[in-house]
Amino acid sequence: MLALQVLVNGILLGGLYGLMALGMSLIWGVMNIVNIAHGALIMLGAYVTFWLFTLWGWDPFLSLPATIALLFVYGYCLQRFLLNLIVRAQLFLTLLITFGVEVVMVNLVRIFWSSDLRQVTPSYAGANFGVGGLTVPYVRLWVFGTTVALSVLFLLILEKTRLGRAIRATSEELRAARLTGIPVAHIYAVTFGLGAALAGAAGGLWGMLFPITPVMGGGLTLKSFVVAVLGGLGTMMGAIVGGLVLGLAESFTATYLGPTWPNAISFGLLVLILIVRPTGIVGRKG
Amino acid sequence: MATRSSAPVVIGALVVLVLAVAPMGLSPFLTQFLINLFMLAALAESWNIIGGFTGYASFGNVAFFGIGAYTTGVLLSVLEWPFALALPLSGLVAMAFAALVGMPILRLKGHYFAIATLGVAETMREIVYNLKITGGGTGLTMPITKNPLPFFYLMLGILLAATVVNWWLSASRFGYGLVAIREDEDAAMAMGINAALYKTAAFALSGAFAGLVGGVFAYWITFIDPEGVFKVITTIQMIIMAVFGGMGTVVGPLLGALVLASVSELLSTHLVSLAELFNGIIVILVVLFMPKGLADAIRKREFSLRQLARNLREYRV
Image (cartoon, rainbow over all chains, first blue to last red; front, side, top):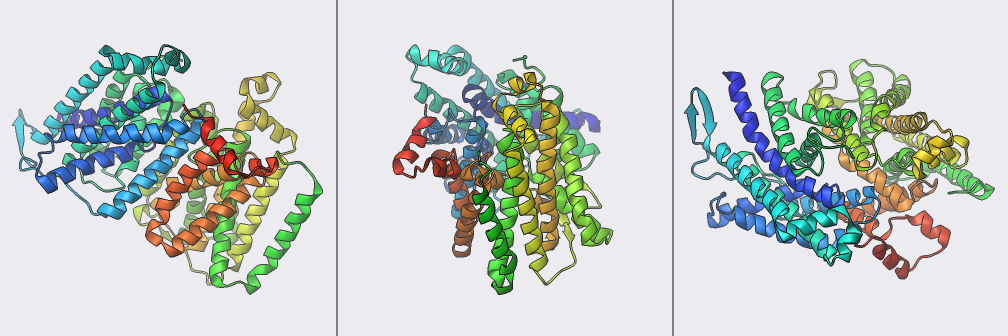
Protein backbone atom coordinates (compact mmCIF):
# COMPACT_ATOMS: atom_id res chain seq x y z
CA MET A 1 0.00 0.00 0.00
CA LEU A 2 2.83 2.35 0.92
CA ALA A 3 4.49 1.68 -2.42
CA LEU A 4 1.27 2.56 -4.24
CA GLN A 5 0.92 5.81 -2.28
CA VAL A 6 4.55 6.68 -3.09
CA LEU A 7 3.83 5.93 -6.75
CA VAL A 8 0.85 8.31 -6.78
CA ASN A 9 2.84 11.05 -5.00
CA GLY A 10 5.65 10.61 -7.52
CA ILE A 11 3.37 10.93 -10.53
CA LEU A 12 1.64 14.01 -9.12
CA LEU A 13 5.00 15.71 -8.48
CA GLY A 14 6.39 14.50 -11.80
CA GLY A 15 3.78 16.39 -13.79
CA LEU A 16 5.04 19.65 -12.30
CA TYR A 17 8.65 18.74 -13.07
CA GLY A 18 7.60 18.04 -16.64
CA LEU A 19 6.03 21.49 -16.97
CA MET A 20 9.22 23.10 -15.61
CA ALA A 21 11.42 21.24 -18.04
CA LEU A 22 9.17 22.01 -21.02
CA GLY A 23 10.17 25.69 -20.98
CA MET A 24 13.84 24.92 -20.54
CA SER A 25 13.80 22.32 -23.30
CA LEU A 26 12.09 24.77 -25.67
CA ILE A 27 14.65 27.54 -25.10
CA TRP A 28 17.53 25.08 -25.37
CA GLY A 29 16.15 23.41 -28.47
CA VAL A 30 15.37 26.57 -30.43
CA MET A 31 18.18 28.94 -29.45
CA ASN A 32 20.82 26.62 -28.00
CA ILE A 33 20.78 28.63 -24.77
CA VAL A 34 21.15 26.73 -21.52
CA ASN A 35 19.02 28.99 -19.41
CA ILE A 36 20.47 29.04 -15.91
CA ALA A 37 17.91 31.72 -15.03
CA HIS A 38 15.09 29.21 -15.56
CA GLY A 39 14.75 28.58 -11.83
CA ALA A 40 14.68 32.32 -11.19
CA LEU A 41 11.76 32.60 -13.65
CA ILE A 42 9.97 29.84 -11.72
CA MET A 43 10.67 31.80 -8.54
CA LEU A 44 9.28 34.99 -10.08
CA GLY A 45 6.13 33.15 -11.16
CA ALA A 46 5.68 31.87 -7.62
CA TYR A 47 6.03 35.39 -6.21
CA VAL A 48 3.59 36.88 -8.72
CA THR A 49 0.99 34.28 -7.71
CA PHE A 50 1.79 34.89 -4.05
CA TRP A 51 1.32 38.67 -4.29
CA LEU A 52 -1.86 38.41 -6.33
CA PHE A 53 -3.20 36.07 -3.64
CA THR A 54 -1.98 38.06 -0.61
CA LEU A 55 -2.69 41.61 -1.78
CA TRP A 56 -5.88 41.14 -3.77
CA GLY A 57 -7.05 37.71 -2.67
CA TRP A 58 -6.92 36.23 -6.17
CA ASP A 59 -7.29 32.46 -6.19
CA PRO A 60 -3.92 30.92 -7.17
CA PHE A 61 -5.45 28.71 -9.88
CA LEU A 62 -7.57 31.47 -11.39
CA SER A 63 -4.70 33.97 -11.34
CA LEU A 64 -2.48 31.68 -13.43
CA PRO A 65 -3.33 33.42 -16.73
CA ALA A 66 -2.14 36.71 -15.22
CA THR A 67 1.10 35.11 -14.00
CA ILE A 68 1.63 33.52 -17.40
CA ALA A 69 1.03 36.80 -19.23
CA LEU A 70 3.39 38.77 -16.98
CA LEU A 71 6.17 36.22 -17.26
CA PHE A 72 5.71 36.09 -21.04
CA VAL A 73 6.24 39.85 -21.32
CA TYR A 74 9.22 39.68 -18.97
CA GLY A 75 10.82 36.82 -20.89
CA TYR A 76 10.16 38.53 -24.22
CA CYS A 77 11.93 41.70 -23.10
CA LEU A 78 14.83 39.77 -21.56
CA GLN A 79 15.55 38.01 -24.84
CA ARG A 80 14.81 40.96 -27.12
CA PHE A 81 16.92 43.52 -25.32
CA LEU A 82 19.63 41.45 -23.63
CA LEU A 83 20.10 37.84 -24.73
CA ASN A 84 19.65 38.54 -28.44
CA LEU A 85 22.85 40.60 -28.23
CA ILE A 86 24.93 37.55 -27.38
CA VAL A 87 22.91 34.62 -28.70
CA ARG A 88 25.39 33.65 -31.43
CA ALA A 89 28.47 33.70 -29.17
CA GLN A 90 30.26 30.59 -27.88
CA LEU A 91 27.91 28.30 -26.01
CA PHE A 92 29.37 28.87 -22.60
CA LEU A 93 29.11 32.65 -22.87
CA THR A 94 25.33 32.45 -23.24
CA LEU A 95 25.34 30.09 -20.27
CA LEU A 96 27.34 32.61 -18.25
CA ILE A 97 25.09 35.54 -19.07
CA THR A 98 21.96 33.70 -18.02
CA PHE A 99 23.75 32.93 -14.78
CA GLY A 100 24.35 36.66 -14.34
CA VAL A 101 20.65 37.29 -14.99
CA GLU A 102 19.78 34.72 -12.33
CA VAL A 103 22.02 36.34 -9.70
CA VAL A 104 20.58 39.78 -10.45
CA MET A 105 16.97 38.55 -10.28
CA VAL A 106 17.47 36.60 -7.06
CA ASN A 107 19.15 39.52 -5.34
CA LEU A 108 16.61 42.11 -6.48
CA VAL A 109 13.84 39.90 -5.11
CA ARG A 110 15.80 39.44 -1.89
CA ILE A 111 16.27 43.19 -1.50
CA PHE A 112 12.71 44.23 -2.32
CA TRP A 113 10.68 41.32 -0.95
CA SER A 114 13.09 39.99 1.76
CA SER A 115 14.25 36.39 2.26
CA ASP A 116 11.21 35.39 4.34
CA LEU A 117 9.54 32.06 3.63
CA ARG A 118 6.20 32.69 1.92
CA GLN A 119 3.31 30.37 1.29
CA VAL A 120 0.16 30.48 -0.80
CA THR A 121 -2.58 29.04 1.38
CA PRO A 122 -6.05 29.10 -0.15
CA SER A 123 -8.88 27.83 2.06
CA TYR A 124 -8.84 24.41 0.38
CA ALA A 125 -5.05 23.97 0.91
CA GLY A 126 -5.24 21.10 3.41
CA ALA A 127 -8.22 19.23 1.97
CA ASN A 128 -7.80 15.72 0.60
CA PHE A 129 -9.81 12.65 -0.32
CA GLY A 130 -9.27 8.91 -0.01
CA VAL A 131 -9.60 6.28 -2.74
CA GLY A 132 -9.20 2.66 -1.72
CA GLY A 133 -6.82 3.49 1.12
CA LEU A 134 -4.82 6.11 -0.82
CA THR A 135 -4.78 9.74 0.28
CA VAL A 136 -4.79 12.34 -2.48
CA PRO A 137 -4.63 16.06 -1.61
CA TYR A 138 -7.00 18.07 -3.82
CA VAL A 139 -4.41 20.74 -4.51
CA ARG A 140 -1.86 18.23 -5.80
CA LEU A 141 -4.42 16.63 -8.07
CA TRP A 142 -5.55 19.99 -9.49
CA VAL A 143 -1.95 21.09 -9.93
CA PHE A 144 -1.33 17.89 -11.87
CA GLY A 145 -4.43 18.47 -13.99
CA THR A 146 -3.35 22.03 -14.74
CA THR A 147 0.15 20.95 -15.77
CA VAL A 148 -1.32 18.39 -18.17
CA ALA A 149 -3.69 20.98 -19.65
CA LEU A 150 -0.94 23.58 -20.06
CA SER A 151 1.46 21.07 -21.62
CA VAL A 152 -1.16 20.00 -24.16
CA LEU A 153 -2.00 23.63 -24.96
CA PHE A 154 1.66 24.41 -25.45
CA LEU A 155 2.25 21.40 -27.71
CA LEU A 156 -0.76 22.46 -29.81
CA ILE A 157 0.68 25.97 -30.20
CA LEU A 158 4.01 24.54 -31.27
CA GLU A 159 2.60 21.96 -33.68
CA LYS A 160 -0.53 23.51 -35.14
CA THR A 161 -0.14 27.28 -35.36
CA ARG A 162 1.69 29.56 -37.76
CA LEU A 163 3.74 30.87 -34.83
CA GLY A 164 4.74 27.34 -33.85
CA ARG A 165 5.88 26.63 -37.41
CA ALA A 166 7.96 29.81 -37.40
CA ILE A 167 9.59 28.76 -34.12
CA ARG A 168 10.37 25.30 -35.40
CA ALA A 169 11.73 26.68 -38.67
CA THR A 170 13.99 29.12 -36.84
CA SER A 171 15.26 26.35 -34.62
CA GLU A 172 16.18 24.21 -37.61
CA GLU A 173 17.97 26.75 -39.76
CA LEU A 174 18.39 30.36 -38.70
CA ARG A 175 19.51 31.70 -42.06
CA ALA A 176 16.87 29.94 -44.11
CA ALA A 177 14.18 31.08 -41.68
CA ARG A 178 15.33 34.68 -42.09
CA LEU A 179 15.34 34.34 -45.89
CA THR A 180 11.72 33.21 -45.89
CA GLY A 181 10.79 36.40 -44.09
CA ILE A 182 10.53 35.18 -40.51
CA PRO A 183 11.47 38.02 -38.12
CA VAL A 184 14.11 36.00 -36.29
CA ALA A 185 14.83 38.41 -33.45
CA HIS A 186 11.13 38.62 -32.68
CA ILE A 187 10.65 34.84 -32.88
CA TYR A 188 13.58 34.30 -30.53
CA ALA A 189 12.02 36.71 -28.07
CA VAL A 190 8.62 35.02 -28.36
CA THR A 191 10.26 31.65 -27.79
CA PHE A 192 11.97 32.86 -24.65
CA GLY A 193 8.71 34.48 -23.58
CA LEU A 194 6.90 31.16 -23.98
CA GLY A 195 9.62 29.38 -22.01
CA ALA A 196 9.37 32.00 -19.27
CA ALA A 197 5.58 31.72 -19.26
CA LEU A 198 5.77 27.96 -18.77
CA ALA A 199 8.32 28.47 -15.97
CA GLY A 200 6.04 31.10 -14.41
CA ALA A 201 3.06 28.76 -14.53
CA ALA A 202 5.14 26.02 -12.92
CA GLY A 203 6.21 28.50 -10.24
CA GLY A 204 2.65 29.57 -9.52
CA LEU A 205 1.66 25.94 -9.05
CA TRP A 206 4.82 25.12 -7.08
CA GLY A 207 4.01 27.89 -4.58
CA MET A 208 0.81 26.08 -3.59
CA LEU A 209 2.73 22.95 -2.59
CA PHE A 210 6.05 24.23 -1.23
CA PRO A 211 7.41 27.37 0.48
CA ILE A 212 8.58 30.29 -1.68
CA THR A 213 11.98 31.96 -1.15
CA PRO A 214 14.24 34.07 -3.39
CA VAL A 215 16.76 31.21 -3.64
CA MET A 216 14.27 28.43 -4.40
CA GLY A 217 15.17 28.54 -8.09
CA GLY A 218 18.76 27.24 -8.03
CA GLY A 219 17.81 23.67 -7.28
CA LEU A 220 14.85 23.86 -9.66
CA THR A 221 17.08 24.93 -12.56
CA LEU A 222 19.12 21.78 -12.00
CA LYS A 223 16.03 19.64 -11.72
CA SER A 224 14.74 21.09 -14.99
CA PHE A 225 18.06 20.07 -16.55
CA VAL A 226 17.76 16.59 -15.12
CA VAL A 227 14.27 16.23 -16.55
CA ALA A 228 15.12 17.75 -19.94
CA VAL A 229 18.21 15.57 -20.27
CA LEU A 230 16.47 12.46 -18.93
CA GLY A 231 13.75 12.70 -21.52
CA GLY A 232 15.92 13.87 -24.37
CA LEU A 233 16.62 17.48 -25.23
CA GLY A 234 14.49 19.37 -27.65
CA THR A 235 11.80 16.69 -27.68
CA MET A 236 8.76 18.04 -25.90
CA MET A 237 7.38 14.58 -25.09
CA GLY A 238 10.75 13.82 -23.51
CA ALA A 239 10.26 16.57 -20.95
CA ILE A 240 7.01 15.03 -19.81
CA VAL A 241 8.40 11.48 -19.63
CA GLY A 242 11.51 12.78 -17.85
CA GLY A 243 9.36 14.69 -15.36
CA LEU A 244 7.47 11.56 -14.39
CA VAL A 245 10.71 9.56 -14.05
CA LEU A 246 12.26 12.19 -11.79
CA GLY A 247 9.10 12.58 -9.72
CA LEU A 248 8.98 8.83 -9.13
CA ALA A 249 12.72 8.54 -8.42
CA GLU A 250 12.54 11.32 -5.83
CA SER A 251 9.39 10.05 -4.24
CA PHE A 252 10.83 6.57 -3.79
CA THR A 253 14.25 7.70 -2.51
CA ALA A 254 12.65 10.09 -0.02
CA THR A 255 10.56 7.25 1.38
CA TYR A 256 13.05 4.40 1.32
CA LEU A 257 16.45 6.14 1.76
CA GLY A 258 15.57 9.24 3.77
CA PRO A 259 14.43 12.80 3.09
CA THR A 260 17.91 14.23 2.54
CA TRP A 261 18.77 11.90 -0.34
CA PRO A 262 16.47 12.87 -3.26
CA ASN A 263 18.73 15.73 -4.42
CA ALA A 264 21.84 13.55 -4.40
CA ILE A 265 19.94 10.94 -6.40
CA SER A 266 18.55 13.35 -8.98
CA PHE A 267 21.85 15.16 -9.62
CA GLY A 268 23.69 11.84 -9.71
CA LEU A 269 21.09 10.62 -12.20
CA LEU A 270 21.83 13.68 -14.36
CA VAL A 271 25.54 12.86 -14.57
CA LEU A 272 24.86 9.18 -15.13
CA ILE A 273 22.35 9.75 -17.94
CA LEU A 274 24.69 12.22 -19.64
CA ILE A 275 27.47 9.64 -19.59
CA VAL A 276 25.44 6.60 -20.54
CA ARG A 277 22.79 7.98 -22.86
CA PRO A 278 23.19 11.68 -23.73
CA THR A 279 20.22 11.57 -26.10
CA GLY A 280 17.81 10.78 -23.28
CA ILE A 281 15.13 8.15 -22.89
CA VAL A 282 12.95 9.05 -25.86
CA GLY A 283 15.50 11.16 -27.77
CA ARG A 284 16.95 10.30 -31.13
CA LYS A 285 20.59 10.35 -32.10
CA GLY A 286 22.11 13.49 -33.58
CA MET B 1 49.24 33.27 -26.64
CA ALA B 2 52.06 34.62 -24.51
CA THR B 3 55.51 34.44 -26.02
CA ARG B 4 58.53 33.31 -24.10
CA SER B 5 60.42 36.57 -23.76
CA SER B 6 62.43 37.40 -20.66
CA ALA B 7 60.60 40.64 -19.75
CA PRO B 8 57.54 39.00 -18.12
CA VAL B 9 59.81 36.64 -16.20
CA VAL B 10 61.86 39.54 -14.78
CA ILE B 11 58.75 41.54 -13.89
CA GLY B 12 57.19 38.43 -12.38
CA ALA B 13 60.28 37.73 -10.28
CA LEU B 14 60.26 41.32 -8.98
CA VAL B 15 56.56 41.15 -8.10
CA VAL B 16 57.09 37.88 -6.25
CA LEU B 17 60.05 39.33 -4.36
CA VAL B 18 58.02 42.36 -3.26
CA LEU B 19 55.10 40.12 -2.27
CA ALA B 20 57.39 37.79 -0.34
CA VAL B 21 58.59 40.52 2.01
CA ALA B 22 55.38 42.54 1.93
CA PRO B 23 53.33 40.96 4.75
CA MET B 24 55.79 42.26 7.41
CA GLY B 25 54.47 45.76 6.82
CA LEU B 26 50.87 45.10 5.81
CA SER B 27 47.75 45.83 7.79
CA PRO B 28 45.67 42.76 8.76
CA PHE B 29 42.95 43.89 6.38
CA LEU B 30 45.31 44.10 3.41
CA THR B 31 46.83 40.72 4.29
CA GLN B 32 43.40 39.10 4.25
CA PHE B 33 42.58 40.81 0.97
CA LEU B 34 45.79 39.54 -0.62
CA ILE B 35 45.26 35.98 0.60
CA ASN B 36 41.79 36.11 -0.93
CA LEU B 37 43.18 37.58 -4.15
CA PHE B 38 45.83 34.85 -4.45
CA MET B 39 43.16 32.26 -3.85
CA LEU B 40 40.88 33.60 -6.58
CA ALA B 41 43.77 34.04 -9.01
CA ALA B 42 45.01 30.49 -8.37
CA LEU B 43 41.49 29.15 -8.95
CA ALA B 44 41.21 31.17 -12.18
CA GLU B 45 44.57 29.82 -13.39
CA SER B 46 43.50 26.30 -12.51
CA TRP B 47 40.24 26.70 -14.44
CA ASN B 48 42.22 28.13 -17.35
CA ILE B 49 44.01 24.79 -17.84
CA ILE B 50 40.81 22.93 -18.73
CA GLY B 51 38.56 25.82 -19.83
CA GLY B 52 41.06 28.12 -21.52
CA PHE B 53 43.72 25.91 -23.05
CA THR B 54 41.68 22.76 -23.65
CA GLY B 55 38.41 24.55 -24.47
CA TYR B 56 36.24 22.43 -22.18
CA ALA B 57 34.12 24.95 -20.24
CA SER B 58 33.82 23.23 -16.89
CA PHE B 59 31.01 24.59 -14.73
CA GLY B 60 31.88 22.29 -11.84
CA ASN B 61 35.46 23.08 -10.83
CA VAL B 62 34.21 24.02 -7.38
CA ALA B 63 33.84 20.26 -6.81
CA PHE B 64 37.65 19.96 -6.70
CA PHE B 65 37.93 22.97 -4.43
CA GLY B 66 35.33 21.48 -2.09
CA ILE B 67 36.91 18.03 -2.13
CA GLY B 68 40.26 19.60 -1.26
CA ALA B 69 38.69 21.60 1.55
CA TYR B 70 36.96 18.53 2.95
CA THR B 71 40.04 16.31 2.66
CA THR B 72 41.99 18.77 4.80
CA GLY B 73 38.97 19.29 7.02
CA VAL B 74 38.42 15.61 7.79
CA LEU B 75 42.13 14.82 8.20
CA LEU B 76 42.69 17.83 10.46
CA SER B 77 39.65 17.93 12.68
CA VAL B 78 38.47 14.29 12.71
CA LEU B 79 41.68 12.27 12.34
CA GLU B 80 43.93 15.01 13.81
CA TRP B 81 46.65 14.72 11.20
CA PRO B 82 49.24 17.51 10.88
CA PHE B 83 48.38 20.11 8.22
CA ALA B 84 51.67 19.49 6.40
CA LEU B 85 50.46 15.98 5.56
CA ALA B 86 46.82 16.88 5.00
CA LEU B 87 47.44 19.59 2.39
CA PRO B 88 49.34 17.53 -0.20
CA LEU B 89 46.71 14.86 0.17
CA SER B 90 44.01 17.43 -0.62
CA GLY B 91 45.70 18.06 -3.96
CA LEU B 92 46.13 14.36 -4.65
CA VAL B 93 42.57 13.37 -3.76
CA ALA B 94 41.13 16.18 -5.90
CA MET B 95 43.43 15.19 -8.75
CA ALA B 96 42.45 11.53 -8.56
CA PHE B 97 38.78 12.50 -8.42
CA ALA B 98 39.14 14.78 -11.44
CA ALA B 99 40.86 12.02 -13.41
CA LEU B 100 38.22 9.44 -12.48
CA VAL B 101 35.25 11.69 -13.23
CA GLY B 102 37.00 13.20 -16.22
CA MET B 103 37.39 9.94 -18.10
CA PRO B 104 33.66 9.49 -18.76
CA ILE B 105 32.46 13.11 -18.84
CA LEU B 106 35.22 14.52 -21.03
CA ARG B 107 33.66 12.54 -23.86
CA LEU B 108 30.79 15.03 -23.74
CA LYS B 109 30.96 18.33 -25.58
CA GLY B 110 29.59 21.87 -25.29
CA HIS B 111 26.52 22.28 -23.14
CA TYR B 112 26.46 18.62 -22.23
CA PHE B 113 29.91 18.82 -20.70
CA ALA B 114 29.06 22.07 -18.91
CA ILE B 115 25.94 20.60 -17.34
CA ALA B 116 27.57 17.30 -16.47
CA THR B 117 30.29 19.14 -14.54
CA LEU B 118 27.66 21.29 -12.83
CA GLY B 119 25.87 18.07 -11.92
CA VAL B 120 29.07 16.56 -10.51
CA ALA B 121 29.59 19.57 -8.22
CA GLU B 122 25.99 19.52 -7.00
CA THR B 123 26.10 15.76 -6.46
CA MET B 124 29.28 16.11 -4.39
CA ARG B 125 27.63 18.76 -2.23
CA GLU B 126 24.65 16.51 -1.60
CA ILE B 127 26.85 13.49 -0.84
CA VAL B 128 29.01 15.44 1.62
CA TYR B 129 25.79 16.75 3.16
CA ASN B 130 24.65 13.16 3.74
CA LEU B 131 27.90 11.67 5.07
CA LYS B 132 28.68 11.28 8.76
CA ILE B 133 32.45 11.72 8.62
CA THR B 134 32.11 15.16 7.00
CA GLY B 135 29.82 16.41 9.75
CA GLY B 136 26.81 16.48 7.37
CA GLY B 137 25.03 19.81 7.10
CA THR B 138 26.63 21.23 10.26
CA GLY B 139 30.11 21.18 8.77
CA LEU B 140 33.56 20.88 10.33
CA THR B 141 35.53 23.20 12.58
CA MET B 142 39.29 23.37 12.26
CA PRO B 143 41.78 24.23 15.05
CA ILE B 144 42.29 28.00 15.01
CA THR B 145 45.60 29.58 14.01
CA LYS B 146 46.11 33.24 14.85
CA ASN B 147 48.94 33.96 12.44
CA PRO B 148 47.79 34.57 8.85
CA LEU B 149 51.32 34.57 7.41
CA PRO B 150 51.52 30.81 6.61
CA PHE B 151 48.30 31.11 4.62
CA PHE B 152 49.66 34.14 2.80
CA TYR B 153 52.75 32.24 1.67
CA LEU B 154 50.89 29.01 0.92
CA MET B 155 48.33 30.72 -1.31
CA LEU B 156 51.07 32.72 -2.99
CA GLY B 157 53.05 29.53 -3.53
CA ILE B 158 50.09 27.69 -5.07
CA LEU B 159 49.33 30.68 -7.28
CA LEU B 160 52.95 30.76 -8.45
CA ALA B 161 52.94 27.04 -9.20
CA ALA B 162 49.65 27.32 -11.10
CA THR B 163 50.96 30.28 -13.10
CA VAL B 164 54.18 28.46 -13.94
CA VAL B 165 52.19 25.46 -15.13
CA ASN B 166 50.05 27.74 -17.34
CA TRP B 167 53.19 29.36 -18.68
CA TRP B 168 54.64 25.94 -19.43
CA LEU B 169 51.40 24.99 -21.23
CA SER B 170 51.63 28.10 -23.38
CA ALA B 171 54.85 26.82 -24.96
CA SER B 172 55.20 23.08 -24.65
CA ARG B 173 54.27 20.00 -26.58
CA PHE B 174 51.60 19.07 -24.06
CA GLY B 175 50.14 22.61 -24.09
CA TYR B 176 50.09 22.75 -27.90
CA GLY B 177 48.30 19.42 -27.85
CA LEU B 178 45.60 20.88 -25.60
CA VAL B 179 45.20 23.94 -27.83
CA ALA B 180 44.93 21.66 -30.87
CA ILE B 181 42.13 19.79 -29.11
CA ARG B 182 40.40 23.11 -28.39
CA GLU B 183 40.62 24.26 -31.99
CA ASP B 184 39.57 20.99 -33.63
CA GLU B 185 39.49 17.76 -31.69
CA ASP B 186 39.07 15.46 -34.69
CA ALA B 187 41.97 17.07 -36.50
CA ALA B 188 44.10 16.83 -33.35
CA MET B 189 43.39 13.13 -33.10
CA ALA B 190 44.14 12.65 -36.77
CA MET B 191 47.55 14.20 -36.10
CA GLY B 192 48.23 11.53 -33.50
CA ILE B 193 47.32 13.37 -30.30
CA ASN B 194 45.83 11.04 -27.71
CA ALA B 195 42.93 13.37 -26.98
CA ALA B 196 41.38 11.31 -24.19
CA LEU B 197 44.68 11.15 -22.30
CA TYR B 198 45.49 14.84 -22.85
CA LYS B 199 42.05 16.02 -21.76
CA THR B 200 42.05 13.81 -18.67
CA ALA B 201 45.54 14.98 -17.72
CA ALA B 202 44.49 18.64 -18.12
CA PHE B 203 41.36 18.06 -16.04
CA ALA B 204 43.39 16.30 -13.32
CA LEU B 205 45.96 19.09 -13.27
CA SER B 206 43.18 21.65 -12.98
CA GLY B 207 41.61 19.62 -10.18
CA ALA B 208 44.90 19.27 -8.28
CA PHE B 209 45.38 23.03 -8.01
CA ALA B 210 41.77 23.69 -7.06
CA GLY B 211 42.09 20.95 -4.42
CA LEU B 212 45.24 22.49 -2.94
CA VAL B 213 43.58 25.90 -2.78
CA GLY B 214 40.58 24.29 -1.09
CA GLY B 215 42.83 22.66 1.49
CA VAL B 216 44.49 25.94 2.45
CA PHE B 217 41.12 27.69 2.40
CA ALA B 218 39.63 25.21 4.89
CA TYR B 219 42.40 25.71 7.46
CA TRP B 220 42.49 29.48 6.89
CA ILE B 221 38.75 30.03 7.26
CA THR B 222 38.59 27.40 10.11
CA PHE B 223 34.99 26.40 9.35
CA ILE B 224 33.58 24.59 6.32
CA ASP B 225 30.12 23.35 5.44
CA PRO B 226 28.66 21.88 2.22
CA GLU B 227 26.76 25.06 1.30
CA GLY B 228 29.90 27.17 1.73
CA VAL B 229 32.52 25.21 -0.19
CA PHE B 230 30.41 23.81 -3.06
CA LYS B 231 28.91 27.11 -4.21
CA VAL B 232 28.12 27.38 -7.93
CA ILE B 233 29.11 31.05 -7.79
CA THR B 234 32.70 30.03 -6.96
CA THR B 235 32.99 28.20 -10.28
CA ILE B 236 31.39 31.16 -12.03
CA GLN B 237 33.94 33.49 -10.43
CA MET B 238 36.78 31.34 -11.77
CA ILE B 239 35.27 31.45 -15.25
CA ILE B 240 34.47 35.13 -15.26
CA MET B 241 37.98 36.06 -14.06
CA ALA B 242 39.51 33.92 -16.80
CA VAL B 243 37.11 35.30 -19.44
CA PHE B 244 37.53 38.91 -18.34
CA GLY B 245 41.31 38.62 -18.32
CA GLY B 246 41.59 36.43 -21.40
CA MET B 247 41.04 32.70 -21.67
CA GLY B 248 43.93 30.50 -22.70
CA THR B 249 46.53 33.15 -21.82
CA VAL B 250 48.90 33.05 -18.87
CA VAL B 251 48.43 36.59 -17.55
CA GLY B 252 44.71 36.81 -18.36
CA PRO B 253 43.38 35.00 -15.29
CA LEU B 254 45.80 37.00 -13.10
CA LEU B 255 44.57 40.30 -14.54
CA GLY B 256 40.97 39.21 -14.26
CA ALA B 257 41.39 38.15 -10.65
CA LEU B 258 43.17 41.39 -9.74
CA VAL B 259 40.51 43.64 -11.26
CA LEU B 260 37.44 41.67 -10.22
CA ALA B 261 38.64 40.88 -6.69
CA SER B 262 39.42 44.55 -6.12
CA VAL B 263 36.07 45.69 -7.47
CA SER B 264 34.10 43.19 -5.44
CA GLU B 265 36.15 43.98 -2.30
CA LEU B 266 35.42 47.69 -2.71
CA LEU B 267 31.75 47.02 -3.27
CA SER B 268 31.35 44.56 -0.44
CA THR B 269 32.99 46.80 2.17
CA HIS B 270 30.69 49.69 1.26
CA LEU B 271 27.51 47.91 0.23
CA VAL B 272 27.43 44.53 1.91
CA SER B 273 23.87 43.67 0.93
CA LEU B 274 24.39 44.68 -2.70
CA ALA B 275 27.71 42.89 -3.26
CA GLU B 276 26.15 39.80 -4.79
CA LEU B 277 23.88 41.87 -7.02
CA PHE B 278 26.95 43.62 -8.41
CA ASN B 279 28.62 40.25 -8.99
CA GLY B 280 25.71 39.35 -11.22
CA ILE B 281 25.82 42.65 -13.07
CA ILE B 282 29.57 42.25 -13.60
CA VAL B 283 29.03 38.79 -15.12
CA ILE B 284 26.50 40.25 -17.58
CA LEU B 285 28.68 43.24 -18.50
CA VAL B 286 31.82 41.16 -19.00
CA VAL B 287 30.02 38.74 -21.31
CA LEU B 288 28.44 41.58 -23.30
CA PHE B 289 31.43 43.87 -23.64
CA MET B 290 34.60 41.86 -23.02
CA PRO B 291 33.99 38.32 -24.28
CA LYS B 292 37.57 38.13 -25.60
CA GLY B 293 39.18 39.48 -22.47
CA LEU B 294 41.59 42.19 -21.39
CA ALA B 295 44.67 40.32 -22.62
CA ASP B 296 43.28 40.47 -26.16
CA ALA B 297 42.64 44.21 -25.88
CA ILE B 298 46.14 44.79 -24.50
CA ARG B 299 47.75 42.82 -27.29
CA LYS B 300 45.86 44.77 -29.93
CA ARG B 301 46.45 48.01 -27.96
CA GLU B 302 42.83 48.83 -28.55
CA PHE B 303 40.97 50.43 -25.67
CA SER B 304 38.08 52.42 -27.04
CA LEU B 305 34.36 52.67 -26.77
CA ARG B 306 34.23 51.71 -30.42
CA GLN B 307 35.91 48.40 -29.62
CA LEU B 308 33.38 47.76 -26.85
CA ALA B 309 30.54 48.59 -29.25
CA ARG B 310 32.05 46.22 -31.82
CA ASN B 311 32.15 43.43 -29.23
CA LEU B 312 28.53 44.14 -28.44
CA ARG B 313 27.46 43.86 -32.08
CA GLU B 314 29.48 40.81 -32.95
CA TYR B 315 27.18 38.04 -31.71
CA ARG B 316 23.84 39.77 -32.18
CA VAL B 317 20.99 38.11 -34.01
